[in-house]
Amino acid sequence: MTARRRGPGRVAVHLLLWGYAAVALLPLVVMVLGSLRPTGEILTAPLGLPLSPTLGSYGRVWTEASFGAYLLNSLIVTCGAVLLGTAVSATAAYALARYDFPGNRLLGAYVLAGLMLPIRLGLVPIFYLMDSMGLIDSLLGLTLLYAASGVPFCVFVLSAFYRSLPGELEEAARIDGAGEFRIFGRIMLPLVRPALASVTLFQFVPLWHEFLYPLVLLRSEEKFTIPRGLSQFFGEYTTDWSALFAGLVLATAPLFVLFVLATKQIIAGLTAGMGR
Amino acid sequence: MPRWRVLVVFLLPAVLLYSVFIVYPLLSAFHYSFFEWRGIRQAGFAGLGNYRDLFTVYPYDRQLWRAFAHNALFFAGTMLIQNTVGLLFALLLFRYGRGRRFLQAAFTTPYLVDPLVVGYLWSLLLNPTFGPVNALLEAAGLDSWALPWLGDTRTALPVIIVVNAWQWVGFPMLLFSAALAGIPAEYHEAARVDGASAWQAFRRVTLPLLTPAIGVVSVLTFIGNFNAFGLVYAMAGSTGSPAGSTDVLGLLFYRVAFVEGGVEAIGRSSALAVLMFVFVFGVSLLAGSYFRRRERTLV
Image 1 (cartoon, each protein chain N blue to C red):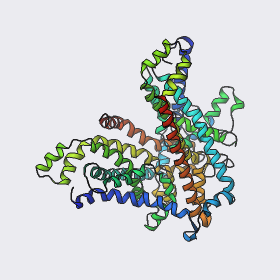
Image 2 (image 1 turned 90 degrees about the vertical axis):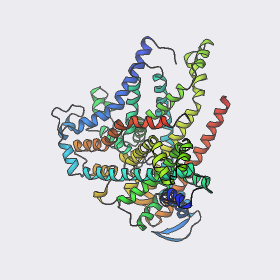
Image 3 (image 1 turned 180 degrees about the vertical axis):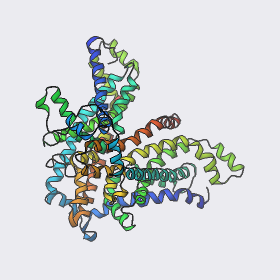
Image 4 (image 1 turned 120 degrees about the horizontal axis):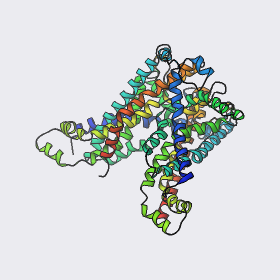
C-alpha cells in the first residue's frame, strides 16, 4: 500500500481519484449552471452551458415562491435556536463543571443522556405538547425545540472545556471580591470562546437541514423554513426546471458561505480543546 | 458551595428547556405506546396492543417488514458501496502527493448539502426524458442503459443507496484517513522485510489495525440508515414510490403518525417509534461491544 506505484498502476490511481472528484462536484456544477439557463434550453440540451446566462429564475423563486421569506424564517429559527441553546448550555455547563454541589453528577448524567436519545422518537408527543401551548405553526415553538435539542451536546463539549481551565484565576478574582456572575462573565466565559464558536457551528448544520419537524409543525407558507419551503416548491414548480435549480442553489448557498467564512474558527476551536 | 440562587440561575434555563422539549416528549412516547387512542383521547390501557397491531393489522403487517427489509438493504448497500469506496479512497490518498487536500475537499463537499436538496437534485438529474444522466449515457452510446432509474421498482432503491453514498462517502474517507495516519510506519516496514505482498500487508497488518475505525463507521452508518427520511422523501415521496419499492421505516412512521394512521395514529406510531429506537439502540450497543472485544484481541 505504501510502496509508490509506477507506470500504469499509478496512472489508474490518478484517473480514479480525479475522475471521482468530477463525479462528486459535477452535479453541483450542473445545479448552478442550470439555474442560470432558461428552462427551454435545459430541456432541449440537458448538458449544455449557459449561452446567455440569466438570473431571471432567481427573481421568480425569490418573489413568487417566497424564498426570501423561507430564508428569513430559517435564519430566525436556526440563529435563535443556536444562540439560545449555546447561551443556556454555557451557564449550565459552567455550574456543572466548576461548582461542587449535591446532585451534580446525577444532573450531569441526566443532561448527557440526551446525547443518546433520538429526538425523532418524541415527534408525536412534541406535536401535542406544542398544540397545547399554542405553538403549532409558530417559529417560536420550532426555535425552542431546536434550542433544547442542542443542550446535551453543548453541555458535553463546554463542560469539558471549563474543567480544563486552571482554578487560580477564579480564586484570585474571588479574593478580590468579585461575585459569581462577574467571575463567570468576565473571566471564565471569554476563556472558552473557541469552544463556543465550534459548538455554535456544529449545531447550525443539522438544524439548518432539519425537515421532519417543520413538515409536521408548520402549516402556513409564510412560516416555512427553507427545507419545508423547498418540498412545497418542488410540488408546485414541477416543469420550471430553471426555477427548481435556482431554488436548490438558494437552499445550499448559505451553508457554503458559512463554511468558507468559519472553517478556520472551527479548526481553532477544535484544536484549542485537545491535548489536555 | 455557592448559594442556591446562583446555581438556580446558572442551571435552571437549560434544565427546563431540555426537560420540557426533549425528556418529557421522549418519555411520553413510551407512555402513549401502551394506551389505546381514539383520536387525541386516551381510551384505556392497551398493554402491548399497539405493538401487536403493527404486526397483524393490514396494511402495517406487510409494510412494516417491507420497510424494515429496505432499511436493511440500505445499510448493507451503504456498507458495501460507500464505506468500501471510502476506505479505498483513504488508502489511495494516503501518501498521495500534490492535490491530496483538494481531492479530500472535493469528495467531502456533497456532505455539506442538505439531504433533501441532494434528493431533489438527483431526481432532476435522473429524470428519464430531460435528465443529464441519461443524456450523458446516450451520448456515450449506452442507450440501453438510459433507464427510468427512479420509476422502476427494481432500480429505485439501489439508485437511492448510490445517491446517499455520493453524499456521504467523504465521511468514512476522513475517518479512515485519520486512522491510517495513526498506524506506525514500522509495521509496514516489518511486513515488507518479511516479504509480504502489498495485499498481504493490507490484509494482515492494515485492516486489523483499522478495526476501531471500521467499528465507528459501521455503527454510525447503521444509525444513519435506519433513521433515513429527507433524502428518501425527496426522491420517492412519503409512500416510497414506485409502488412502495423504496419505503423505509422513517417514511412509514411519518405516514402512521400524520397521514394515514386514523384514530389509532398516536398509539401505533408511538409503538413504532419505540420499536425503532429499541432496535437501533440495542444493535448499536451490541455492535459497539463486539468491536471493542475485537480491538482487545489485537493488543
